[in-house]
Image 1 (cartoon, rainbow, N blue to C red):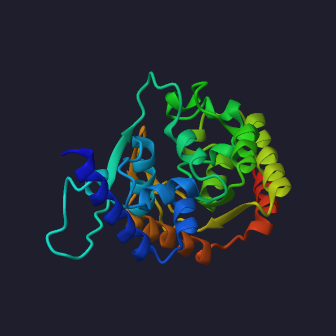
Image 2: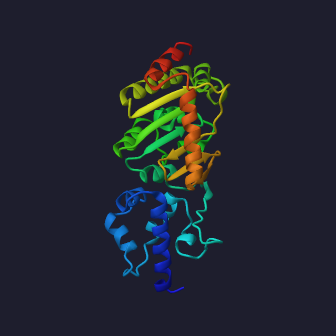
Image 3: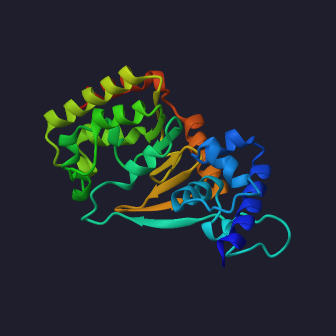
Length: 277
């Protein structure tokens, strides 16, 4: 199709998304990480220019639609707006230079990150400890851990909330599971390190502990309202559909509600369990 045919279709579908969102154009542009001036251009009937691929991807990710739908390549079966959710598998190749988490974190400047770790939270883990984990690729220099990662996340204005099972701390203390070959001094150092960071960075960092015997969660991260990633082990199931993101956010909020240890108690819990090492 000629761009003169595509541009009006894109503009109408963008207007439909704007109306459905209930936001004003400035708020909608901010949600899609667009400049207000760019948003005005996209809505201008006299403008026949199409957005660049990056802008299309941001709109599609933020609104839970496909790029094909935005450009009119696919259409609704009736006159109503049909927003299709999207999901994809994001592999982590051995030769990758950076973790996909780095990009996803960078895309939600000023937003909220909700995180259920697979083991210990990356930003609360001593790099020396990571080298002992079961997934050697995670110890690569392309992955950032510990206080440097925490500072990077917070420098972007991101609010960080973590939910994790209290059993993860007990397993670390007793040297069980993936921690069975970890030297005792390193496990002790990890508890001190985690307690210090939790205490120093509260309340922009909030850590909740729940009982895994009563509640379960797969490892996942919700990046604002833009995407969510479920960790499968060397692979992420990444979703950008607004309904799926909302559902995973509600799942995280449920873990917060049932948590036995609240954020202001988290650092002391680490120190208490440390005594059992």
